[in-house]
Image (cartoon, rainbow, N blue to C red; front, side):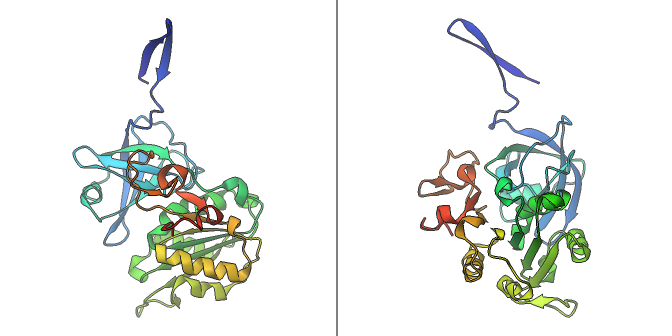
Length: 288
């Protein structure tokens, strides 16, 4: 592992650069899955065979030389070692270039960055995860973590909403969760099709499918419009605002609080978050 050596006050100091947040690492693409017309799921392994150590909810900067980099939430749990997953939606020059890569190619990753889900506040309680659209990607890291350490949590409920059946992500996971006894899984789509036999409607329609205890810890990730309506339902149920956690993966750019692109008043989404208790940001204009 490369090191740098400097002399400070006449005393030689060796500084290991392996944890430098500005230095990307090469990652090999182990598997690519085209899950929708716009999204690809990548399973990666660091080229030096070291383990990516992270917490559910943290982000990575992912890039290619000559194109740049973009922040993405880690989409797998740290309990599943050796490899890690990301999902790339084709919305710009960098993401389109990434989605042209294939198994065996390499890309660059920097991180993990940011603060993930507060596991210490979630353990020992009922847990409800509400994921809308591509919000399933970062919450999947917590879903897998909870399933792998099921005894650390009480009741586990998962709401997932997609625009239509063709936009659903992680189809193999969805199939497993529908049959699992470890998670109470509820799903919906905004618009059905002849093949869809499940619930049709916005994600808040799922609240009528089950009973939520007021002491439940809740994690939400999805489009901004979803937050307000979901929080309104949770407040009807008596869930305390400090027990509602929002994953605000939006507007991030540099990932280290330098560019100000994700700044909301005195908060930087990339370094103070991306996960925030609702009670911490509810009065910040444009937070949700």
